Amino acid sequence: APRAEKYLKKKMFDFDPHYIVIQFGTSDAQCPIRAGRRPRGRSSELSVEGNTSAALRTSLFHGQPATALSLLRWQIASLIGHLRKIEPVTPLSSYIAAIELMVDDCRSVGIKPVVLSPFVYGSRYTMRKAIAYVDALHELHSRAPDMILIDGVSLLEDFPKSRILQHDGLHLTRVGQNLVGDAIGQAIVEDIIKCGCVGDASRQQFG
Image (tube, rainbow, N blue to C red):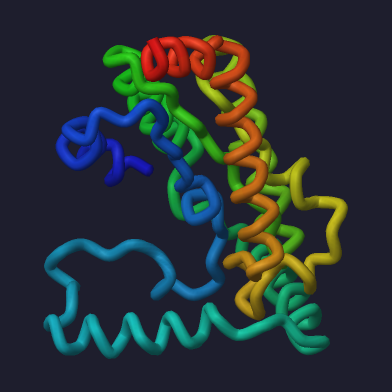
């Protein structure tokens, strides 16, 4: 989120969108047990060819569906996280500050920000850490009620994890993606109806 905040205006505002979906919390709140999963500086980046190969391997890994062994893997990751007291990738204070800046930037030019909270995780340890990030977003929403907040935990927590998470315990399956996509679409449609934008658009179109 802190890195994305620097590019929001530069990359998105020229398109003059009505809505911008902001979803970075899942990566920020993750507590990876391998140091290699944490962001690295530019000085440690690989060559273009190496990056392409690494990206392919990463894509193949994250695309693996969950199995019975995945449940064991998630339990082990949770235990290691607890024993090593691993902290999330992005500190909560840095994460919420970046999200608030992006929300304020959007609101200042009449763009409606749609903020997604972290989703569920395979690791129960990471899940416990992520709740603080979700709570902080709800607090932000109370200060900026015109933003749209989609609580990914509430949305997905009643589904079996093996159905909505890939083997890595982080990325969503097609089922999970569809649930989140439907929630985003429904929230935007409800906002359009609430604001009366549909009627205004129809009057402008048909005179």
